[in-house]
Image 1: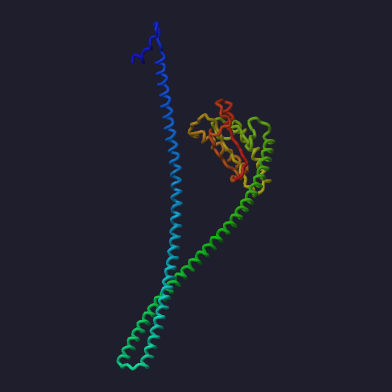
Image 2: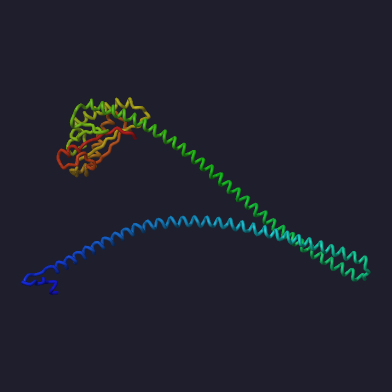
Length: 366
């Protein structure tokens, strides 16, 4: 500890600070390594979270694929079982045919034996009882053979009936599969036809909409041009893009939503210009004049207008009502209030406040 806290003394009384500095450097390097390991551990944690989410999605997809594979395997297994049953029944039928042939050969052998016995009875003198016994025995053997042959024929008939039933089921399944394929092909053809019709209708609709938009743009340009001539070159009334902007001071008093005499005069010019344009707009162009009210950010809290939003909406509605009184159809007008939320100038100055207090008018399509 003395070596760590104090420097070594060199000959002559001077102090050597090399060892404490080396220890401090190692401590600093150790802290940096611990910090980097912490950052690496956090990065590994977040990367593990991201990969776990992706793994869950992959597991869901794999589960769906496995379910579909199981269904396909079940169908294949059912088809294999059906083919196996048909093969087994075919083998049983072949065995029954073989047994029937064997029985026929045995019957022929018995008949030959019977004929041989009858021939021998004619040539050899035997007692009547021995002949009758031999004939009865042969007759019994013949009857047993016929019974076995009848049983084998019945088994063969059952096997044939089962084969016929299975063949009928296979034919029915083939018919159902063919019907499903035909229905699928018809559905695909109908889908392609409908897609072609939809694309054609979409193209025609886009063409019609583009035509109506072009017509409306033409009338909008004419409307703004005539309105500019009617209002004159005033700095407090200007066009910006597709909007006609009136400063609120031109139309309303401070904190008021009632059109003043100057505002009524300007709105009368607007109504006359719009009336002249209306006569030229075709009936199939569904246009509308939107009146938007805007305020500055300075709050207003009165009994009549609890917020800037109420004031902007009331001013837009006041303009719309005046235009209606001048003969503009109500279904061609819309009043909207935006409050202080869409300023033209975000600066915190009186000039910016004045620019933001405005009424905007836009000729648009419904």
